[in-house]
Length: 151
Image (cartoon, rainbow, N blue to C red; front, side):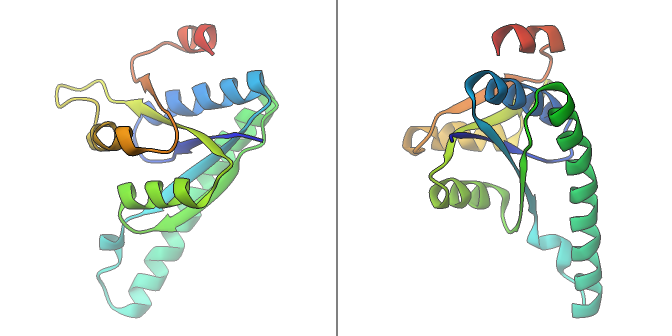
Protein backbone atom coordinates (compact mmCIF):
# COMPACT_ATOMS: atom_id res chain seq x y z
CA UNK A 1 0.00 0.00 0.00
CA UNK A 2 1.33 3.42 -0.95
CA UNK A 3 1.26 5.99 1.81
CA UNK A 4 1.00 9.75 1.99
CA UNK A 5 3.59 11.27 4.32
CA UNK A 6 2.45 14.33 6.29
CA UNK A 7 4.58 16.36 8.68
CA UNK A 8 3.12 17.12 12.09
CA UNK A 9 4.30 20.49 13.32
CA UNK A 10 2.88 23.52 15.09
CA UNK A 11 1.67 25.31 11.96
CA UNK A 12 -1.96 25.87 11.01
CA UNK A 13 -1.27 24.87 7.40
CA UNK A 14 -0.41 21.41 8.70
CA UNK A 15 -4.17 20.89 9.16
CA UNK A 16 -4.85 21.30 5.45
CA UNK A 17 -2.06 18.89 4.59
CA UNK A 18 -3.53 16.33 7.02
CA UNK A 19 -7.02 16.67 5.55
CA UNK A 20 -5.75 16.38 1.97
CA UNK A 21 -3.61 13.32 2.74
CA UNK A 22 -6.45 11.55 4.55
CA UNK A 23 -8.91 12.22 1.73
CA UNK A 24 -6.46 11.13 -0.99
CA UNK A 25 -5.61 7.98 0.95
CA UNK A 26 -9.31 7.15 1.39
CA UNK A 27 -10.03 7.78 -2.30
CA UNK A 28 -7.07 5.77 -3.59
CA UNK A 29 -6.89 2.90 -1.10
CA UNK A 30 -3.68 4.25 0.37
CA UNK A 31 -2.47 5.02 3.86
CA UNK A 32 -1.15 7.95 5.82
CA UNK A 33 2.02 8.24 7.86
CA UNK A 34 2.41 11.24 10.13
CA UNK A 35 6.00 12.19 10.83
CA UNK A 36 6.94 14.42 13.75
CA UNK A 37 10.50 15.61 14.22
CA UNK A 38 11.86 16.83 17.53
CA UNK A 39 14.68 19.31 16.88
CA UNK A 40 17.93 18.55 18.72
CA UNK A 41 18.32 22.11 20.01
CA UNK A 42 15.44 21.48 22.42
CA UNK A 43 17.76 19.27 24.48
CA UNK A 44 20.84 21.40 25.09
CA UNK A 45 20.53 20.96 28.86
CA UNK A 46 21.80 18.58 31.47
CA UNK A 47 21.12 14.95 30.70
CA UNK A 48 18.30 14.55 33.24
CA UNK A 49 16.55 17.73 32.09
CA UNK A 50 16.99 16.77 28.44
CA UNK A 51 15.41 13.36 29.08
CA UNK A 52 12.40 14.98 30.74
CA UNK A 53 12.04 17.50 27.90
CA UNK A 54 12.30 14.72 25.32
CA UNK A 55 9.57 12.73 27.08
CA UNK A 56 7.34 15.81 27.29
CA UNK A 57 7.85 16.55 23.57
CA UNK A 58 6.88 12.97 22.72
CA UNK A 59 3.77 13.21 24.91
CA UNK A 60 2.69 16.42 23.14
CA UNK A 61 3.23 14.83 19.74
CA UNK A 62 1.31 11.70 20.70
CA UNK A 63 -1.59 13.80 22.05
CA UNK A 64 -1.79 15.79 18.78
CA UNK A 65 -1.53 12.58 16.78
CA UNK A 66 -4.45 11.04 18.68
CA UNK A 67 -6.66 13.98 17.69
CA UNK A 68 -5.70 13.71 14.00
CA UNK A 69 -5.90 9.92 14.04
CA UNK A 70 -9.38 9.90 15.54
CA UNK A 71 -10.59 12.45 12.99
CA UNK A 72 -9.11 10.54 10.05
CA UNK A 73 -10.65 7.28 11.25
CA UNK A 74 -14.08 8.82 11.79
CA UNK A 75 -14.25 11.01 8.67
CA UNK A 76 -12.23 9.13 6.04
CA UNK A 77 -11.88 5.62 7.46
CA UNK A 78 -8.07 5.93 7.41
CA UNK A 79 -5.90 4.84 10.33
CA UNK A 80 -2.61 6.75 10.19
CA UNK A 81 0.77 5.62 11.47
CA UNK A 82 2.93 7.83 13.67
CA UNK A 83 6.68 8.12 13.36
CA UNK A 84 8.67 10.32 15.77
CA UNK A 85 12.27 11.18 15.04
CA UNK A 86 14.85 13.48 16.55
CA UNK A 87 17.13 15.64 14.46
CA UNK A 88 17.04 18.34 11.82
CA UNK A 89 13.59 18.45 10.23
CA UNK A 90 14.61 18.46 6.58
CA UNK A 91 17.22 15.71 6.96
CA UNK A 92 14.86 13.49 8.94
CA UNK A 93 12.11 13.82 6.33
CA UNK A 94 14.45 12.92 3.48
CA UNK A 95 15.95 10.02 5.45
CA UNK A 96 12.50 8.70 6.32
CA UNK A 97 11.40 8.80 2.68
CA UNK A 98 14.57 7.03 1.56
CA UNK A 99 14.20 4.38 4.29
CA UNK A 100 10.53 3.62 3.58
CA UNK A 101 9.62 2.45 0.08
CA UNK A 102 5.91 2.48 0.89
CA UNK A 103 5.88 6.29 1.03
CA UNK A 104 4.47 7.47 -2.30
CA UNK A 105 3.82 11.20 -1.81
CA UNK A 106 5.05 13.89 0.58
CA UNK A 107 2.20 16.28 1.46
CA UNK A 108 3.09 19.70 2.84
CA UNK A 109 0.97 22.68 3.81
CA UNK A 110 2.06 26.10 2.56
CA UNK A 111 1.88 29.10 4.86
CA UNK A 112 -0.13 32.17 3.93
CA UNK A 113 2.05 34.81 5.57
CA UNK A 114 4.08 37.55 3.92
CA UNK A 115 7.28 35.60 4.58
CA UNK A 116 6.28 32.97 2.02
CA UNK A 117 5.17 29.35 2.15
CA UNK A 118 7.43 28.52 5.08
CA UNK A 119 10.97 27.24 5.49
CA UNK A 120 10.07 23.56 5.12
CA UNK A 121 8.14 24.05 1.87
CA UNK A 122 10.91 26.28 0.51
CA UNK A 123 13.57 23.71 1.36
CA UNK A 124 11.63 20.77 -0.06
CA UNK A 125 10.91 22.65 -3.28
CA UNK A 126 14.63 23.21 -3.76
CA UNK A 127 15.29 19.53 -3.13
CA UNK A 128 12.23 18.28 -5.08
CA UNK A 129 14.14 17.68 -8.31
CA UNK A 130 16.10 14.87 -6.67
CA UNK A 131 13.30 13.48 -4.46
CA UNK A 132 12.33 9.87 -5.16
CA UNK A 133 8.62 10.76 -4.76
CA UNK A 134 6.32 13.64 -5.71
CA UNK A 135 5.72 16.53 -3.33
CA UNK A 136 2.19 17.89 -3.03
CA UNK A 137 1.78 21.35 -1.54
CA UNK A 138 -1.62 22.26 -0.14
CA UNK A 139 -2.23 26.01 0.17
CA UNK A 140 -2.75 27.09 3.76
CA UNK A 141 -5.69 29.28 2.78
CA UNK A 142 -7.51 26.55 0.88
CA UNK A 143 -10.99 25.89 2.25
CA UNK A 144 -12.14 22.51 3.52
CA UNK A 145 -14.63 22.34 0.65
CA UNK A 146 -11.93 23.03 -1.93
CA UNK A 147 -9.70 20.35 -0.45
CA UNK A 148 -12.55 17.85 -0.57
CA UNK A 149 -13.28 18.80 -4.20
CA UNK A 150 -9.72 18.17 -5.40
CA UNK A 151 -9.10 15.08 -3.33
